[in-house]
Image (cartoon, rainbow, N blue to C red; front, side, top):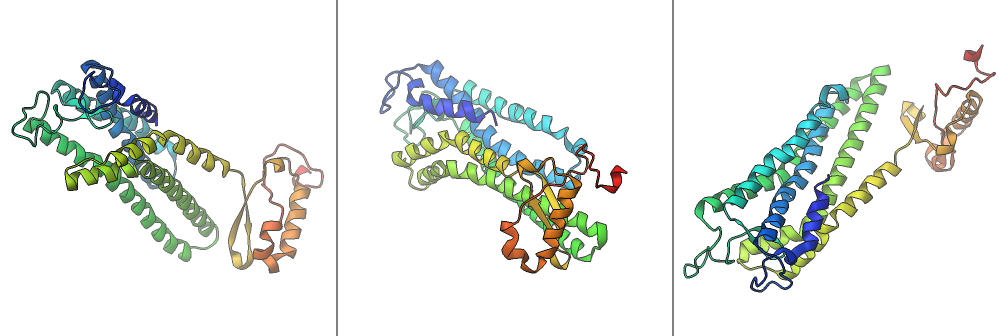
Length: 323
């Protein structure tokens, strides 16, 4: 999500971009042009960032519907990227031309100037604040809420429903079909776990901003402590996303499949130094595993984990296939 970077940069610039002399804004050192530029980027990124998180959840649904055959849904990716531009750019241009980008609490964003002139009949608005712009801002806010809070959970609930349906199919299946359904269910669970982790990581960095916005809607006042905490956490969104990504990457590895007691399908995460196992090694590992079926759960952590590479390109003289 490349939009996280300019979003964090505009947060870092903060009040510096506001016109010199802006009331009650410490550090204002810019002009109206720098303020519009900052707000323009903020409007695009503020919508594009949750848009990508939402698209990740929807993309997962397409992957499941097409049985993870990328050639059937890969073309959707380009439309997701184009949508991030074609949806947010016209909105930012419209707000800029209607003079609705003005100094806010911490950055230049959607606001009237002077601040609060919409609610005070004795103070005329110099920039923005007209009824049409306010209506468009309301629609923009509603769309933002749907993209952020409605679509991602709905997509995850849809995937959860597929898992429950797949569980019933697995219970009725036998043989090879049962194995396939078991692995499909496992992949779906991993997919939901990853999508949920990304979504929660995003919400965790925005929680204070959401609380401060709710506080403003209820009381009509701004809590500067909540705003500062919200900007601070939001700016670390890229770091949190990076940590989640590398954590998921660290869990990746080769998987070996064995049938445990009672026909239960088990998988082992392959170690990196097991890539050159021979058939003899596999046979010995299988013998040790069979001898310890009685203490399966207690001894699983102490067993050596092997990854099975059928086409490893090495000839083993003890293998019947080598003859």
